[in-house]
Amino acid sequence: MWVYEKRLQFPVKITKTCPKTAKLIISQYGGPDGELSASMRYLAQRYSMPVKSVGGLLTDIGTEELGHMEMICAMVYQLTKDLPMKEIKESGFDAYYIDHTTGLWPQAAAGLPFSAIEFQSKGDAITDLTENLAAEQKARTVYDNLLRAITDPEIREPLKFLRAREIVHFQRFGEALEKTKETLDAKNFYYFNPEYDKAMYHPGR
Amino acid sequence: MDKCCTNTLAIASVPCQETDLSNLYTAEEALCNGTIFPELNLPFFITETDKKSSCGCLASGCCRDMMEIMKTGFYLDDLTLYLDTHPQDKKALALMQECLAKKQQQVCDFAKDHFVLTKNCIPQAPDKGAFAWSDGPAPWEGVYE
Image (cartoon, rainbow over all chains, first blue to last red; front, side, top):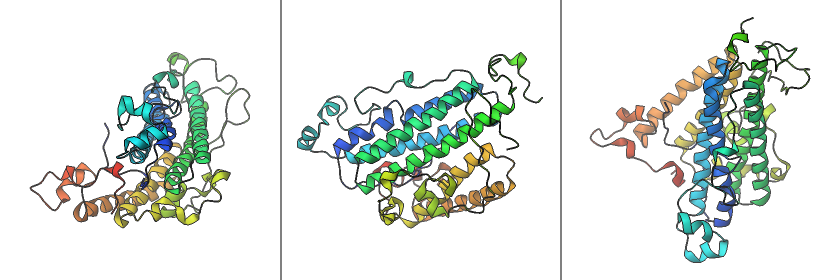
């Protein structure tokens, strides 16, 4: 169950529309390393995690990512609010406009629709936590790329905040991986899958 | 955490964060930097020349009470993730209790003075006859006055 708080995690207040920038930022909504992908990845993986506290961490980070998705959507919304037709055409926002007007729809910067194919839930704790470490790095790179391309401070501040969160999440997933490793035999972490081969898994020992 | 399984071949290792929590950012610095831990604040060189005062949370003319809730809320968010992997840290636990109480009070006061942020606070809304859950601007509108 989730409880909604009617606020953003970090303020988003963009006073100047820019559909060109919206086209870039929308990738962190529906793109391969976006916030929607992130939350769905972690919230899917948590059910079968063998270490309970790691399932808890996945819930908390997955929940925070939903909040990040809301921030990104707020940015795209404010960047495209009440756009005149002339601006839509000149900025190259017209292709998106034809299908979605100025509504929000999860897609990547190049127009590819959001897809679950872009993330994994593999049913193996080591594999999934390693995927998550990579996912946080990929998202950080996207924020780096956005920060190179965008100069408006009103847009940069929330992007910098979101980038910083990727690094903290990486650290926590690293610690979750260490916690999982502690329940396994260091001589061979790959002898069995702790999520599936339960008869072989004795975390208390 | 008790121990770190570092120095093992063919598997990723990240050192566990070890801190006595003595150097934490203030709530305002934490929100601006995206973490409560100075040692995890690793900025990108491209942003080095950004004006320090351009921190959106301070420059946007944000409603002060909303800002305070965002600061406390974020402190809690980051502290929760730390506790998820450091559940034995009594100092962090005490800090969390303190933040939780503060946040609860702030959200309650906000419902009285501005509008309802959570359904739990509907009883605090001044107009008892109205459906207070629909009060206030939508979060994505960027209205913080």
